[in-house]
Length: 384
Image (cartoon, rainbow, N blue to C red; front, side, top):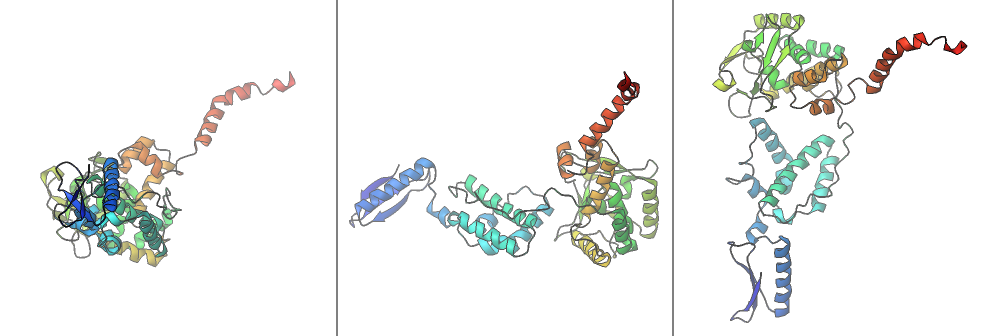
């Protein structure tokens, strides 16, 4: 509840606390009628849970995100996720919202910002990703009681016409890229396109994880290359799938054997829980671990040389090539899930919507096969 008292100066003071134990806040008025009106407003906000402190009203987005023990510091993120956020923060979030008090953000301002991002030429998926960063910050601020309501409802995002679509290169395009990246990275192209590895898994593949006799590779770690600090091994992206085995065709075994002979692997230390030391099969032109930005540069340079369509987004499109080839060959969906390293079958089915054989076609073929003998036996019924 709020209370009113008259000060020795003759002014009327409204006193209240946002919650039990909170510091008392107050505001003074010349007229008692104004004090009464403000008291009623405060009590409505207290009843609705909308009252916030004066300090919280002044707290800026930048202070909330970057202060010691604040939002960013407490995120349980991998280094790669943190780096992506920091890139979004520096380029798009901080310039717009850094100095803005969180409590003053309104939906109209957020919508205008989203519209500006769209007009800047960013892909719809990028606009949505950046917007989701702001959503996460504001939701946390709401949970912390810094803002009473979230100003992110009703925001219209640009239409993502490629949503749910996986763009897959043809075999000819894969072959062209393998030739364009140069001899040192040629085997890496075929490894991604054959084993369906994520780029960080591929550059983190070590000799110790390849069983050349059995024709199997064990995928249980990836290479982490932070912008500051040395490259190191890290756990896989899918935490619920700690490792998987993928088959090595004879053609890829031969390519890897030639590659290892030409470019000797280098050793990289790793914690015991990540398999200890590993001999990296793929290295850059300086015989060092391949960093993410360097890998992207290799792809973009080669893509321009062969005029690769822009919708084939980097090394990850080679992963799609391998997985869709299994789907097209009629491989059991759950094995495709394991091969891809997905935690659930739903993720696999949704990611590759449109690539699975048509249920109607399969059903038609199955029913035709089941009724084929009956059709033959009944061929002469028309003359009865």
